[in-house]
Amino acid sequence: MSSAKFKKEFKDFDCARDFKLAHQVLCIQEFNFENESIVGYVDMLFHPLVPDLRKVKINCKQCSIHRVVVNGIWEADVSYNDPILEICQNDNKLRTFDYFQACHSAAVLAVDADSGNGELSVKLPDDFLPSILEMKPFHVMIEFSLERPQGGIKFVVPDTDGTLLDRGAHLFTCGRENSSRYPSCLPDCWLNDPGKYIFRIIV
Image (cartoon, rainbow, N blue to C red; front, side, top):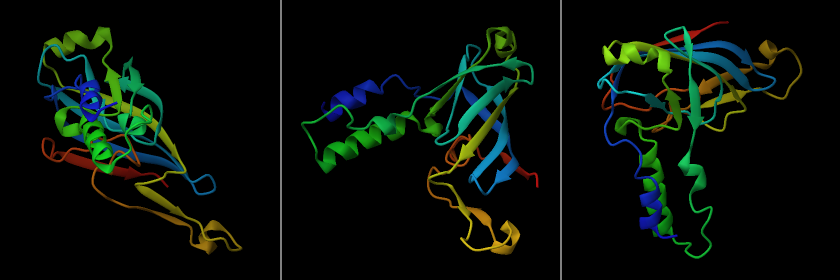
């Protein structure tokens, strides 16, 4: 499969954003150092920019999604697609760095938040669409969990005797470009949405 054909497969992603992200809350409700897991939710406030908005796309790389609710009332259907995981999976003929780089660039653009894209697609419920026609802002709340993350957040549990406190168990975030999608479900956007962020940690 040529790089041009690979790019063509991702031509169906949106070229412009149909919504504005105004505010977001990330709440971590539970830590488990034994399983290296966290449980929490994100609550995002969106402003529709078009009256025919039917879905919003959000970046999400490692999380398990348990529930998505719109405006605290309607449960929404979600779908997940990460084209980065499929790079060169079906091709056995061309194995060059230039080919891989072209395929990788196309896959990254297909989930670029500043272009209105993301791995997680939230379908707005039909009963909620009249509010979109009136261009009213709306909330999307996503309950998620994360176990043994491979990036974005690191659990440190020294292999010594004693309680977790005695052993100095702790965790930390490790930032890099496009890293918000690793420990949570947040759009990795800095060009279009320099809005307010609130982080809550329940201990």
